[in-house]
Structures are given as C-alpha cells and as structure tokens.
Amino acid sequence: WSSDVCSSDLVENLLREVNQHPRQRQLWQDAKIWAIQHRFIIGLSLGAIILLVFNHIWISYLVRRRSHQLEQAHIHLREQKEALEQAQRLNILGEMASGFAHELNQPLSAIKSYAQGSAIRLEKENKNHPLLPALRQIDQQAQRGADIIRNLRLWVGKQSANSDTVPQIGRASCRERV
Image (cartoon, rainbow, N blue to C red; front, side, top):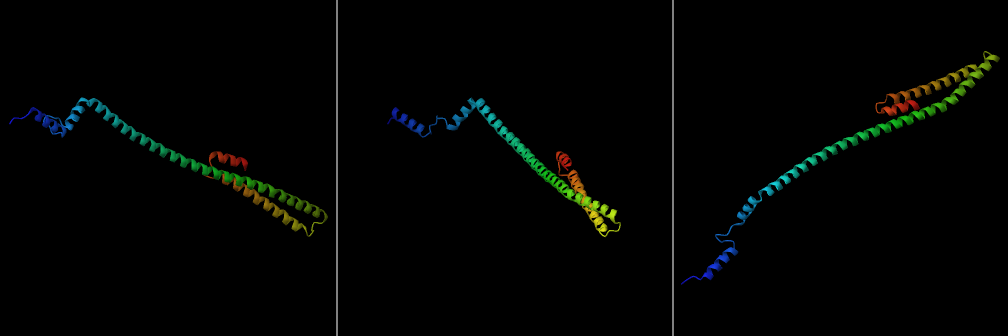
C-alpha cells in the first residue's frame, strides 16, 4: 500500500485549517515578530499615552486649585457685600437720626424761644409772677430735649466712625453724611 501524494496534501491542509500544523507559526509568535518590527512606533504610542495621562493629571490639579481660589474669592466677596450692606444700614441710620434731630430741634428751639421770651416779658411786668417758674421749667426741659438729641446724634456719628465692619470708603461717607 502506498500513500498518495494527494492524501498528504489533504492532511496538511486539514492541519493548517485547525491551526495544528507543525510548521505553522502560532499567533503569539506573529504578534511578537510584528512588535519587534514596529517597536519604535509602539514606543512612541506608549510615550504619547503616558504624556497624555500626566497632562490630564496636571490639568485636573490646576482645575482643582483654580476652583478653590474661586471659592475663596466668592467667600471674600460675600463678606465684603455683607460689610457694605452693614455700612449702608449705618448710613441710613445716620441720615434718619440727622433728619429726626433736625425735625425735633426746630420745635424745641421754638418752645425754648417762646418760653424765654414770655419769661422776659413777665419779668418786666412782675418779678414774682406765678408763671415764671413754669416758663423756666419749660425752658429747661426744652434744653434737656435738645441736649438728648445732640448726644444721640454724636453717638450715632461715633458708632459709624468706630465700627469694624464698615470699610474705609463707607466710614468716610458716613462721617460726611452725619
């Protein structure tokens, strides 16, 4: 019995199809050969990937740092806004106190002047007139009210000038307005 040439070709083809031929290279061997042939390109690719990873880490760090700076700036701006609002409230309080003081000083000055004028006229007529002590009391009480208003005005002026929450610009404008 002899072997046909044809049957050995069939066996070799069959072994190649199932990847079991003794002279056939394995896939890992082909990959190894390809990697050796293209090692420069593979090295460049890996280097680029490493650089991109480091770049991503650096950019992430910069973003976090800038975000933190922005948060700090936001907090600082909020504190300044609150200080400005406090200065505005103090300014309004000073303006209101000045307005009240002016409006109350006018009638008190008139009461004081009328009381003093009436006392002078009554003294010319009769030094012991029974209304003179009452007119002097009116004059004293009117002066007392004017002193209270003046002290209140001075107190409001000191509060706005000495307040720690008022920024420098706010202090100057409060002093000018009061």
